[in-house]
Length: 144
Ligand SMILES: CC(C)(COP(=O)(O)OP(=O)(O)OC[C@H]1O[C@@H](n2cnc3c(N)ncnc32)[C@H](O)[C@@H]1OP(=O)(O)O)[C@@H](O)C(=O)NCCC(=O)NCCS
Image (cartoon, rainbow, N blue to C red; front, side, top):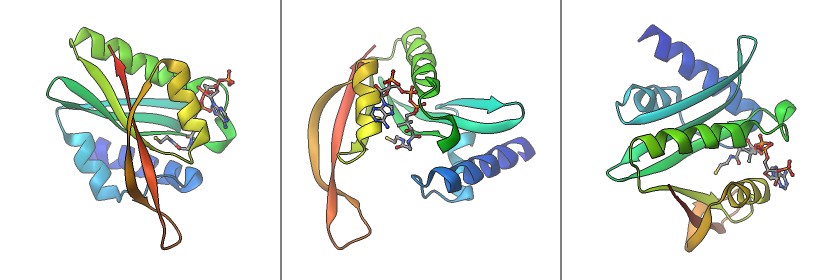
């Protein structure tokens, strides 16, 4: 439990620098404690600088969050974490890896397509924004 608390705290600190995920420490702790979670941390020395969090959903795996610290971008770290997830998902005979991403998230959309994800659809007005307007989500999947 102490380990999960410390890990969740490292994720909160990393997300402050990345600014893309607004989960509370308690929500992260709860997710990390689940037996169906896939968690891939990436450290520089002892500092968490990237991670991927995903969850088994019956036959599929859903990516919950993937974040890389701004000082470590474009070094292939996210690609490495996605490939680790893909390897493990194949071992568990997972059908597909699924995710949702903001249409404006050019970096993530390019990354996922480079790794082999395909666009399955679009969820209108899914994400809140800083204005009254909402933003669409792209639904993507990768067959394992
Ligand atoms: C999206 C994110 C995870 C990418 O991490 P990363 O470690 O920099 O990605 P990689 O180095 O593995 O990049 C692989 C490929 O993705 C694409 N890519 C990554 N960042 C890009 C950018 N800013 N613009 C365009 N393409 C980009 C490129 O094709 C890149 O290959 P290349 O560097 O050989 O051109 C990172 O930008 C991030 O943490 N963003 C904030 C959080 C977020 O949006 N997470 C996704 C939520 S769904």
